[in-house]
Image (cartoon, rainbow, N blue to C red):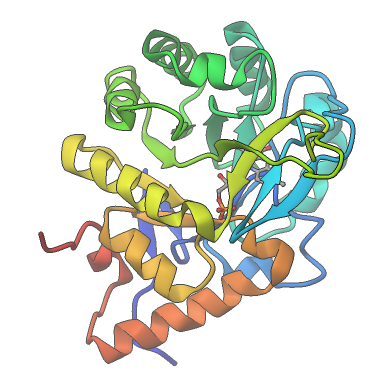
Length: 305
Ligand SMILES: Cc1cc2nc3c(=O)[nH]c(=O)nc-3n(C[C@H](O)[C@H](O)[C@H](O)COP(=O)(O)O)c2cc1C
């Protein structure tokens, strides 16, 4: 038995460890459960939910790029009603922290989703996606506007006592300004980052490879950007951060914590190795043992500049 304390106190929640599975890469938990034991992880973030079901964009909606992938799923999801009826029963049986991710086309829709879902005991916290690059309304139009992000945070705060984590867009010049607004309007934490807008063309047909033309870039290609954004927030605003972007192994995870993340999410790697989360947990234990670190949370913001 390791003596390393991997647990993290995040917004008053006890996470078993800082490893979380990112929204959109594991369905509602059920899609990855047969490949890995979710209960050994700190938590999972469910696919972005909107009030009504969404079909998303037509295919092709995922392509591989150098050291990453582009996706333009367009927030396909089952909607709040079916989530409660069909997905909550599975999530209820899990022994890990459940973050419910919400995406919406209007501020009122965000509020209504959270208002309905906050009474579900299975949901421990809300992650609010104001940064999807693949939808017309809601996505970047909201995530790029300080006032709108502030208003969304404030309005959601008024309908739930559960932790609110706002998932920020990297497609802005000063991400820390958004983190500041989230804090001022009563948000508990921020997640950084969502995907970066990118595209790819077929040189023979000269046509875009994605039906949507542009998509969100994720994977190792975005890690240095994610690290820089998390560091910027950490150095500017006193708010807990969930670090996301290009984490493929425990080394990447340690780096993300050092620049300021209290916990982190893994996304793209789940498509390559659905057991990556468990392997990262093992790697964190060995690293902490070797470095005589008794609590993994000591790593958060421990950079030396
Ligand atoms: C196929 C795919 C679907 C995604 N869907 C969502 C989503 O519904 N909501 C959301 O907030 N983020 C979504 N994301 C973004 C991820 O949660 C994460 O922020 C991003 O992929 C960066 O992390 P990574 O480099 O570890 O993949 C999606 C990412 C991918 C690759």
